[in-house]
Every structure is written in structure tokens, then in C-alpha cells.
Amino acid sequence: MRNRINLTLPVELIGRINELADRKKLPRSAIVEAAVASFLSPDHADAREAAFARRLDRLTRQVQRMERDLGVTAETLALFIRFWLSITPPLPPEAQAAAQAKGRERFDGFVETLGRRLQKGQSFLREIPNDVLGGPPSGIRE
Figure 1 (cartoon, one colour):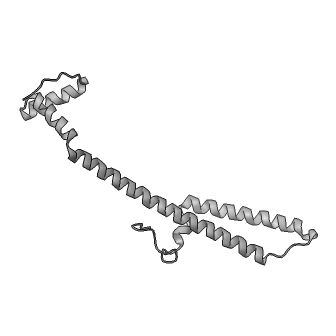
Figure 2: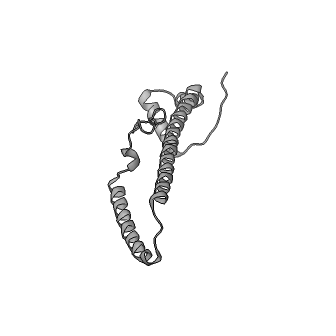
Figure 3: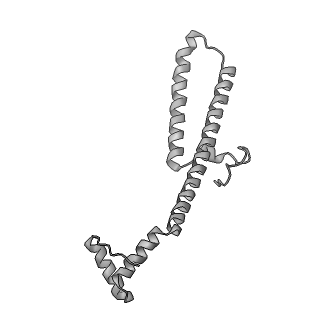
């Protein structure tokens, strides 16, 4: 049993349906029926779900890499601060001005070096071997 349905479509789409019907020598209703059946088929939903799953897997790996990099960065900073605090003796008041000037000079050099590395796309975290970091999160290749 078949039921009739009336619908309106954009002129461009009707033109494409007419072209395909002429080329394949099929009635327009058969082409529209096949398109609707394809759209409603479970295969279409499965393919869409698989595409979403692949994208979610990729996003998960990216988040795992960011989490690992953030952990390495935080630990590096914490170790540096501990080391710096443990080896840096307090300065007498008369040496503080010179130390601050030297500190500004060193910081400016650090910022310049950082800027150059970032412009070149270099990353300290990429220089650390994966075996030192316990390997990349599952499936991640650098």
C-alpha cells in the first residue's frame, strides 16, 4: 500500500532530482523514496555515531595530552621554585638594587628566548622523551 504525500522543496533541489531522474531514467518519486529511505536507515545513524565516536576519541587523546603537559609544567615549576628558594641566600640591603637590575636583565633574556622558541614552534615538553614521562597516554604519538 502506498500513500501520497505533497511536499515543497527548494527549486535547486527539485532541479537536481529532475536531472538524476532523467539521467537514470527513473521516476522522481523513486529517487525521493530512495533518498528518504537512506536518510532513515539505521546505517546512516550508525555511520554518524561512528564519526562522533572517532571525534570524541581524538578529543579525549588531546585532553589527555594537555593534562599530561600541564602536570609536567606544574611539577617543573614547583621543583624550580623549591630549588631556587633552597639555594638563594638572602641579600643584604645594599646589594638588592643591583640584584633587581640583574634579575630584570635575565628575565628580559628569558622572555626573548621564549618568544623565539614559540615563533619557531619549539616546545620544551616535546623535547622530553616519552619514556621519561611514562609514555604518552594510550594511543598518543608525538
